[in-house]
Image (cartoon, rainbow, N blue to C red; front, side, top):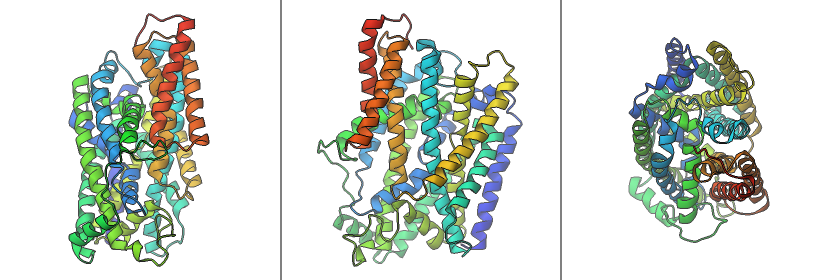
Length: 491
């Protein structure tokens, strides 16, 4: 990589840390630190939602999905479910978030079922998000390792990259709070979109035959397939798993997951939050289409089909994993200056992590009930300590998973589906039944056990996990509530 690119990367990362330092002056209370004082504009929140979904995982993994052998556009069927869920969240979930002053979404469960249910849901969120962001660090490290390799500084620098990026992520989140994260994500989104468009233009110029040749190859290898109406629970991307499974997955990730709900709470009313969420859906759909098309262009550029053993080679040939394809192109084939800017944006994505959401959840939902009545400054200091500890654990997860050949996007969504299903189920139980605490705990336990069995003991694809987990939780909780009696409260 050219020294100019390296200079751009260093300057961009310095600017990110500078932004954190700028917002640090305002972080004098937990309300400001966790929800930005409810003063963030809705359009910035919308951009933040898109940037969160268009994380390093998306930017690198989605092109790899279309690039891989037998890969195509069927991933978009999941996005259709994303759009359906946004409408449901905006009309049913959103009003509940603003009925009183919330720090985390799990406080609603405390109102309805008590502290035990809230604590269980909060703990499950912390575990899931820690694993997911560890994978995010890993993907970002692939890019940095490719930079090191291009400079002949190291043959394998993934572990060192994970640690370095993770430390910068911790410092940025620690000093800037959620405000810094949201505004950096706005800038990050603009760079992402520009970088993806620039990459597509360069690929088209470098592919023999240009755009028409790439499209012809895509058609020849059936890369543009979108719809699959087969009702096969073992297939990952079908119309039914996408619209139904994707909708339930997004209702959980965007409706009951503090990582996303924290962004809604940065506004001051449900209408603004709903506008931010609905607008983000349209942008996300267009982005996914673009990223998948970049994958087709990468397929035409690297031409893996020309390999003698392509039919029997790995799905990402000549690479080890699909997630390595786009980073290789960015670091080795993009023009001077542009490559540095795109790589810098990828690094910034790793820094817009879930550490703030994890800190809010641990401090408000797990620590504060054990140590009530302390000054707000005490809880602010505790939250900062949580950010450091959670960041270190995420670094450890990234290092441990670096040798996996699976798509990181699939790994992240699988983990999210496993844990978010029972959490969504207990929210539905609170909204639509009069169940009490015992019924909620029993439902969550059975939901988690069921989805773990499905994951480990059956070939059912991950888009169905959230549906299975949430419906099992709802069904068992409803049955147990018949014997336990009913509650007069509702979420």
